[in-house]
Image 1 (spheres, rainbow, N blue to C red):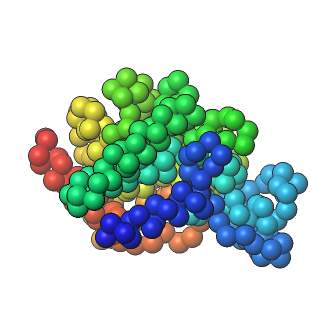
Image 2 (image 1 turned 45 degrees about the vertical axis):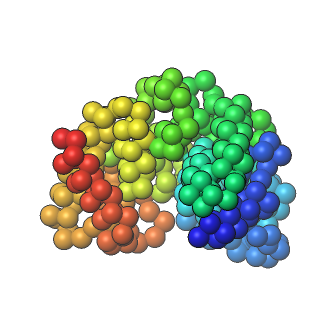
Length: 288
């Protein structure tokens, strides 16, 4: 497995590395006709109204949009459809975690590379503090414009999930929890005054983000907050299942219904909803 993971890591360090030494999402290059097809499809999904003149070409827009698809948060307000120019807080947190784990794997395999991986992780943490930390939390950083994204999202808790944040950084981030915690779970992003219909935004609750949030808070001793969020989420899933006899991809964290922002027909019974529900059942039992 080690060689396969190292190959994946090499891809990020060669194909998805920025000039500031942190990683970003991207896409294969498209020609102008392909770019127009992507533009028509995506602007129809999210009702994106900004002029195409903001981009070099339709192909440039498409590469940025497909980079956002690569992120898994397709689509969201964090990057304002310039995803390729951002070093995201969650992506770089994940890569930090992989570097730590590869160091642990190296120790088990006794291949003499433990220090090399630890150095990579420490270097990434330093770069994230230099560029992503905005004084309150780790924010997505536009390395082309040298600015932080103004959008506060659940991704800010990823450094807690992977153990990168200091106690002081975790405390500062946790102080902003109320921006995205709603009665029925954690919204992907804070509430914004925007015209677009992003599904990875307020008020949608996605199962993976609940899991990352609960484990991140627990990691830094905020057990009461973690337990509250786990209970809120599972109670809502219970109610939704009782009324529909199904689990679903996402739900509205504001009112606990399936009236979520969607770009397609809401899918039934996604595995992540079941998986996070069961994980929280265990967490509640162990801590509550």
